[in-house]
Image 1 (cartoon, rainbow, N blue to C red):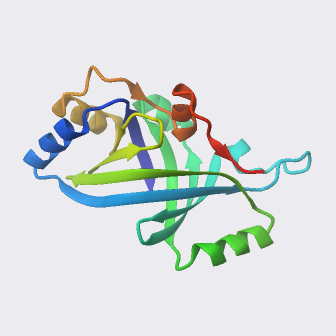
Image 2: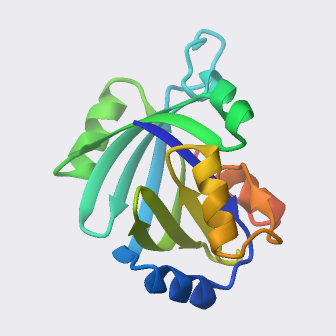
Length: 184
C-alpha cells in the first residue's frame, strides 16, 4: 500500500474531533502504540543498511495488535504531491518477542523505539490520527489517497493556519528539543 500523509502541529484536538464526528467520522482506535525499529548494524561492509537506503523495518504493538511493517520512501511522489509518501507493507504477527528473536538471529538489531498515545478516526478514504508523545504537544496526522485530498480535509477542518510538517517522528522530536530514544 502507498501511504501518503502530513502532520499538523499543535492542534486543538477537541475542536477537530467535534468537526469529524459531525461529518460522521468513526473512531477506529484509541490506545498506546509502542514502536521498535530494526536495522542491520552500521559498519563499512553493511552497504545495504535499510535506513541508509530509505527503508524502515518496525515492530509495533498497537493496543492488543502486533504488526511488523516494512516501509520504503517514495521521494518523487512526496515532491509531486507535497506529502510524506512511503510504500508500506504491514503484516500481523502473533508474538513480538519471538519475531524479534528471529530478526536478531538474522543479524538485525534494535536501533530506536518510541511510545505514544493515539486516537484514530476514519471518514471516507481518510484516516485522522491524534498522537501524543511525552513532552511534545499533540499533533494530527492526516493520511489519504493523495496530496489534494489531504489538503481538502485541511480546509474542511479549518486547519490552513496551522503548521504542516512533512516529517517523521524523529524530526518532530528534534523540532521540540526532545531526545529520541536510540538503542546501542
